[in-house]
Each structure stands twice: as structure tokens, then as C-alpha cells.
Length: 201
Image (cartoon, rainbow, N blue to C red; front, side, top):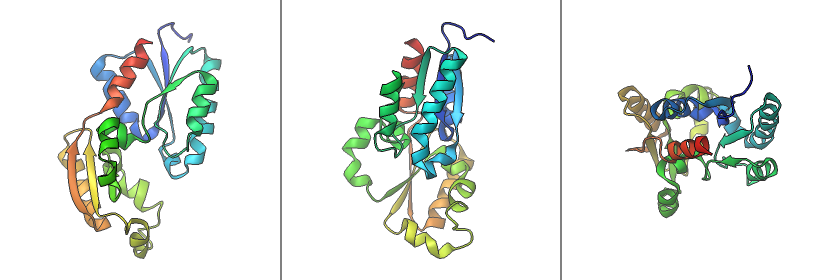
């Protein structure tokens, strides 16, 4: 099927796929065509920039002229920005999704107070066992918990939605990790404005 002139390919992180779709539904952005890359790449950030570059090339081959990258830097050390600049595409601003959910300026202002904070999103609350516990081997070697999380003092659940089940999961995760629990309802933060701006370009 040929690409319509107003269609935009959004290349997004699998960790925020549900949130991107929710924003598109809320704002009526039905001309966004979403292509998600594996959420598990966050354990291997060196894969993100090359993967995005491949996805950009594939989008061009499919006929998309308008492309937006729904990733923050996400541990690529600026390499993702190099890829985006090379191909003339924009990405959502920020060092990681925790920042753009909270608001990049607000996150930067509070950064000194957040050094010992472990962040949890709706995605992580939903997939804590499969995305974090098992890949880190904590289900088999619980003694590793303090090695990985000993420098943290609290778990901050930045919630995109008001979901009692997810909040219960987040509290259980904090208990499992031995961290104090705190919650802030951020909604989708700057993700919504970024998608709306990209879709209007």
C-alpha cells in the first residue's frame, strides 16, 4: 500500500509503544505509522543507534518522507543524535524517558536529588519480572540485588496512568528491591507534545 503524503513513520522504543498509541488515540493522530524496536535493547544500548539507523533506511525504502524517532538518548552517548543528524530526522528531547515523562526542565532542576533514585514507569511496573528480575538473574541469585541496587535509596514510580494494579506492582517492586516507595503521576509528559509537533511537520 503506498504511503500517503501526510503519513509519518514514528520509530519508537518498545518500552513506550503503549504510551505512543495512547497519545495517538487521544490526539487523533491517525496518520502516524508506528514501528517499534525491541524494549530489551535498553539492556544493550549500543544496539539502539544502529537499529534506529536501519529502521530509518527501511522507512525510506517504504516511501516515508516524514520520520520521527521516539527515543531519548537512552544511553547511546550521543550516537543516536549522530544518526538522526545524518538522516535529517528529529528525536524526542531528553536523556531518557524518565526525563521526558517528568518534563526535561523539571528533571534537570531536580537531578541532584534524583541520583539515588530508581525510576519505574508503567511499562516497568507491568513487566518488572520479565524485563528486570529475570534478565538480571535476581530470581536465581537474589544476593545480586544489593550489587545492582545498593546505591539506590528509593523507587520513584512516575505513573503515566492511574492504575491500581500497576501501583500495587510498583510497591511490590520497591519492597523486592529494598527501596523506599514514592509515586508521582506525570501522565505522558513531553511525549504528547513531541508527537503532536512531529505529526504537524
